[in-house]
Every structure is written in structure tokens, then in C-alpha cells.
Length: 155
Ligand SMILES: [Cu+2]
Image (tube, rainbow, N blue to C red; front, side, top):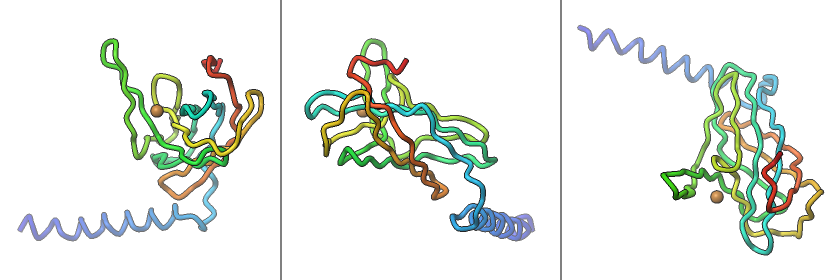
């Protein structure tokens, strides 16, 4: 009997989840919950990959994931995470990074970063270039990012 009774609650949960997905879908004019600030790029010379760093803030009640980044100035923008083990650190590509409800997600040197490769234009230190961030609810946020020198720590 227990098994049979569980079925309706699963159906209800499914319907609720579908309802929430509809409410948060683009086009329902929910207020934008996500903002991106303090964006900057550590520009490396030549064809070396540059790093993108920022803070994303979620004022909404739903946890989201950052799922992608697009750049005008680079042909490829990937989500990377640096992981340190003892004296060695390695970078791994990740397909998403969590942005908690009422929380922040920080990309900073030594942790999450946007790996920017295949420069399309020669960026100059002191200028800005936009990055567009895509979130799991379909929201896209574009931020103006300060181009800084290779030695910059972002301070
Ligand atoms: Cu990287």
C-alpha cells in the first residue's frame, strides 16, 4: 500500500517543479535576480590565455548555476577552476558554477576563473570589454570588464 500511496505525491512534486520552471522562464517578466560586478580581465601577452574574474550576486530565492560566458574579444571563454593540492595547482574545466539563492559566486585568482582564449582583437590595459554571463534559468547578464595587466591581482 505504501508504494501505491507514494505515486500521487511524486506526481504533485513533478507538477510543482514544472510550475516553478514556468514561472522562472524568460518572458514571464520576473525581476532580474542576478547582477555581476567587479569584473576584470588579467590580460596575458600574445596568445596566452587570459583570466576573467567577477562577482555574481543572486537576490532571488532560487539557487542558480552559471553555465556559460561569452566574450566579444575572445573566440573561446571557458569556466575553469584552479585546485591546489600541496604545492601543485591544476586547472579543470567545469560546466557550471553554483550561485546560491540570496548569495554570491566569486571568480578570483586561485579559484574559479573564466579562461579566455583565441583573442580576436588586441585589448589594451586600461580599457574595458564586455563579458556576457548565462545562468541556468536562461537569464543573461552583460558586464563591462576592466582590462588589467598580467601582474594585476585585481586590487
Ligand atoms: Cu584556466
